[in-house]
Length: 155
Image (cartoon, rainbow, N blue to C red; front, side, top):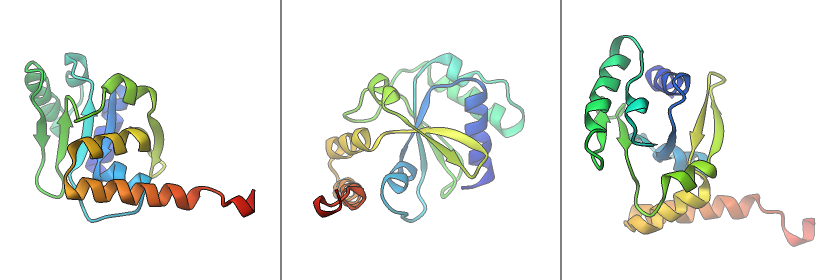
């Protein structure tokens, strides 16, 4: 994971922002690694989340995010391809509060703990979105889940 993304997560955590890692990173966590993807964050859309007192490039990100959050359903994309971060005020088929209660905390490279969407909520989102790619992600997650389940002969 690139250093700028880890710094962004650290800044969000420092300000007690409520966000969840969704999308490609979440699929990779719950199943198997896949190619580079945009980093996607499902963010509780509040101005507090966006008005963080950080320096440098993070300040620019959060100022832009604060402006965008004034419009309830507007997503915000920051960065260049391969290193983009998307902030989404909602995702298809998933309620933020429910997803927040079911979140999984993941330590990233020993540096920062980040809240990830649960496998159940991620599958719900992917099924609701319904693209072939999303349905393939659901299948991949379910294969990994079943591989982790003990066989009846092992119990």
